[in-house]
Image 1 (tube, rainbow, N blue to C red):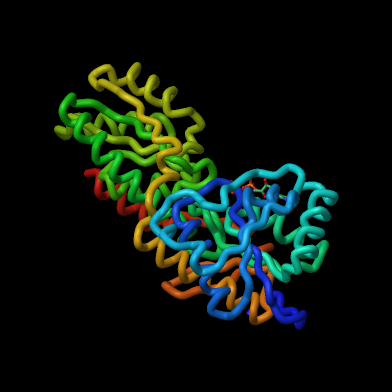
Image 2 (cartoon, helix red, strand yellow; image 1 turned 30 degrees about the vertical axis):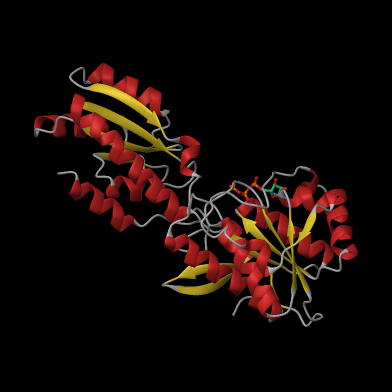
Length: 334
Ligand code: ATP
């Protein structure tokens, strides 16, 4: 297995933090880390506000009862933050001093690839074992088929688009719905299929304006009176959702076009059962990996099994979209 195994001392205290953008399921993962630690008689500490809280020593003891009633909550009870200070060696040194003072032996980082980059640099510099849990709604991390929060975000988007569809049908409108995904089209592609979108625009595929226009013309001629176009934030055509809508309205005056940007509502809400189970499994695996002397790795899920990916690979690798889904979406819009 490609993992960093160290013969270092027994792990007696673990700290856990959430960093980068929040995602549903982060609380369930914090709960899992705290309870898995309790099971193995390891003391668990929660770090507030990500790496910034680590630098300022904002730590709180997390016993099994401190994480009651959070499995169903969105966001993160530990709060998240972006820390520029942690990007500097001096900042990371301060963080290390805090861990030393509190006799903490290892760190679980719940976040995205930026958080893992910081964690890996920290481990290399100061020898603190770090394990990552992927928490981001975008699902844009290599080494796992699902990140925490992704499934919840998919369900949130589908629910919202179902509602938009009601008004689209009532007024014979064409809706452009923008969803998150600057670099990856997982959310747009899956929710586009799930919500029955006419077209799906993603960063991985350049559909081109002409094809979009043709497709919408065809759909109108085939008798469709209303349509939904799902647009990932970073779609490859390179126009934002308002510019796209304007272009279509100018070139297809028959359509009454509207735009809906779903924005931050995609991040919030109670995690789905899938995300709660995933978080529970990942938290346990993170603690057990550290106990087994494995670090500098990210916990992931592949074919339903927990897997480890070295952090440097998880950071550099690309989380490719499932091209079979593109084919499915093309056939479904007939
Ligand atoms: P999201 O996917 O939601 O953006 P992320 O984990 O990628 O999550 P970032 O803002 O990129 O979010 O990173 C979170 C934090 O990780 C940063 O604020 C910083 O403290 C730390 N970090 C990121 N990159 C580095 C780096 N190169 N060196 C040290 N620390 C870093």
